[in-house]
Amino acid sequence: MSQSLRVGRFSTADIHPADRYDAWKAEWQTLAPLFTTEPLEEFRVNSELVRLGEVGFLYTDIASQRWKRDKRLVDEGQNGLAVVVNLDGKAAGTAGRNDWVQMPGSGVLVDHSQTSLHDSAGGRSIGFSIPRQMAIEAGLDVASLHGMVLSPAEMSMLTSHMFQVREALPRFAEEDAPRLGQSMLDLLVLTLKGTRRSEAPGFREDPATLMLRARKEIQAHLGSPSLTIANLCRKLGVSRSTLHRLFEAGGGVQAYIRDMRLEAARHLLLNPENAERIGDIAERLGFSDAAHLSRLFKARFGETPSDCRARSMLTR
Image (cartoon, rainbow, N blue to C red; front, side, top):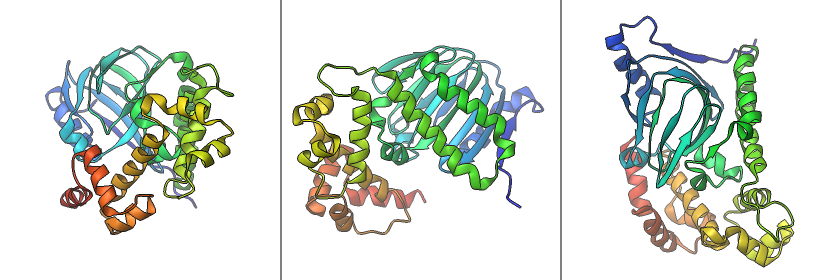
């Protein structure tokens, strides 16, 4: 008989008010030390967390508080993309250099590889977090989504799906978890495609859809020598000028490919179970050699690949 999905629940209802925050903080830090927090009113929380494969699905009713993710926490490597729908109150803050305001029913996207600070009003929320690499492999430009707020109308399909999944969880087994998690990511991709925020003349299809196709194609062939501008244009069925316009704001398609290769290298180096030589990683991801990777890696992340790997080993 298949084992039922395990839903972790935590409530402060039966804890003395003076001890509630410390009790929740101990539980929270055990699960994922993503933020430092500061209550803005008498603390209370009632939450549910379930692992759907690599996706963490969370429903919570929590008091108003401040959430801060600084460089120290970012450097600890717990990086992912979070999608949170605020069901009751208002939330507002900064994501990197971008200010954002979230009203009831809207959703905010947060890239945990970047700093953030926000205050949330007390109330309910529902959402999920995806490993950053998983989101990138689905064609999402995670860094550019940091602090994006989607309206209730834009979020309606995804929000409805999350509530239906939450209600149906008792009917599923552990073996179903990865598929349920994938459904969250798939609907997020469709939600972002449906926003149509980047329309521009001259594209044969809306640029959001084309961008997702381009990113998936790049991710699928990240280390291949066949990943060239000419082959990318041929595969996507677009001209060089169209491809140039698509990636122009981010420095061009070659810069995007380079950055994705560096992100993939960093992901491998931060995995303590990966013993692959740095030179082999460089070759596999399309860099000319280890020195080439090291020079670009340090320019982007402020440390060498060797330093990155050594730091990850210290936090095991």
